Length: 321
Ligand SMILES: C=CC1=C(C)c2cc3[nH]c(cc4nc(cc5[nH]c(cc1n2)c(C)c5CCC(=O)O)C(CCC(=O)O)=C4C)c(C)c3C=C
Ligand SMILES: [Fe+2]
Ligand SMILES: [Fe+2]
Image 1 (cartoon, rainbow, N blue to C red):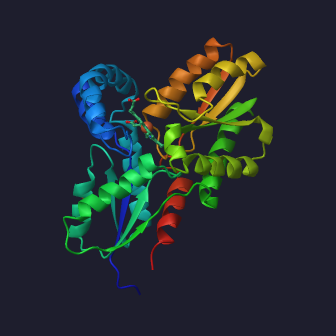
Image 2: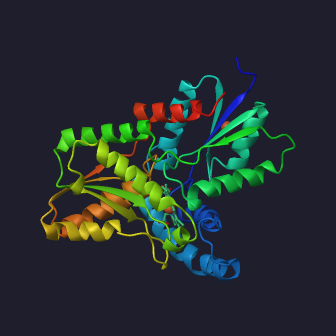
């Protein structure tokens, strides 16, 4: 028997508490002030953020959040809570906490809760299957900063990513197969990942390689022609060049090439959120249909699927001793 007292910290990005301009502004201000997300010199960025971006974007974004809001809250928070409940139930010997990089539940509180349980062994699980400096490293930074407040550190295991873990690929494959059964095989299967600025990649972020690892492993696992699978990047923010090809450009292009039926999967999102439920399922569907496409289906995120919870459990168990 181990003498360790295990703790698990699950971390996703974060989302506003309410679909209101005030709440969205508070969330965006925290998110977009992180240097891992926007690395411009503060003297240039903060006036732009507070003077232009927050006042313009917050009210507009609040309306979009309102359109996807669920009875229990923001979809990202609702699905993340369900994941946490299910994972905690499958790991009875581990104290499980859910935190968000930005907004609530906040990381300092989650870590305080783990300390209150006297954990000696901490597994940090960023809910980002593909490593990026803008997401996973931001979690590392934040945890390290918070731990400066504590004298006694636990042993720490940081799960960098799980882009090609067999159980992750299998869970995605099962989800795709369900959609194929429901709607038939599409002319194209689009795997849309969240983009990042190209410059971050030039400076060493291996995020696109990690996306490619998922894309290749999943394409190879499917009973579907590899030449009909496309990898794209979505959610561009700001005016710097981002990773290409852009999901919306491809959606506009495909119908001109005789593609009438697409299905879209967003493998980089562990839980459905604004970027999948609105940007893909609503906006990109419209783009595809205006361009002449007739059949568009969004394949849901793994959320609290049993296969997803089993994968997350495997990731954690592998880090315990
Ligand atoms: C899945 C991985 C993600 C990466 C990589 C990522 C990088 C990244 N994002 C922004 C800017 C924004 N992202 C926004 C929303 C958002 N982003 C992710 C995930 C990744 N981001 C998620 C899960 C969400 C949804 C949150 C929700 O509440 O549902 C937003 C806010 C929405 C908007 O204003 O459009 C911004 C802004 C940058 C700049 C970046 C890499 C540098
Ligand atoms: Fe807690
Ligand atoms: Fe993002």
